[in-house]
Length: 244
Image 1: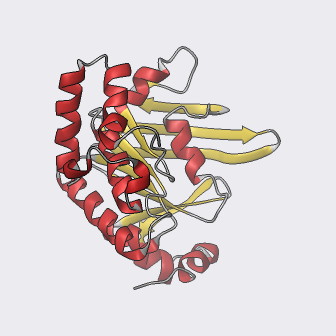
Image 2: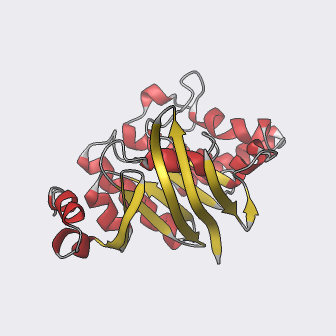
């Protein structure tokens, strides 16, 4: 069943067209991986879905309801569409537990004791419960990424959007995040992941959506994209990636 459906999505910033007629679908249980050169609109695509930026034109449907127009309850929408930011976006003055419970208490109006119970469950799921009283500055990059994921998952979203989840991590931590994403997928979590990391893409998905110039140029296996795709620009991009 289609969870997210995008039709003819356009996003312009002043005179620059960043997204130019995007059409795609995300099914329940998918991991949709988006790659492309810097500035091609990958992160903007995620931000349009979560309404962090407003589309210029086109339509976005979530569970068959249009969410791209005026009158949408954006705060309610974001409870169903989780977002994990490239730089984690944890509150430095709050400890791990407080970071995860904040939205549960402020947005879901959950009793603080129940919010703590829910937060500890998600932290345990990601092997971070023993760090619940630490502050972000006391955590490694990989641990901060786990907390950011726990915060998103605590809201029980229908889908989690991941914006460059390994860009701030070293290779060892990147492999840990890839393993974590695979495990969450096996547990039924639907995800859409923007990345420049071909190793991550290979580990978490069978196919990759290639975005360039604000348009989807291909959606194929990495092997085909890098070796025998008919578009030479697609082959050139993936040929420059470091294949393991």
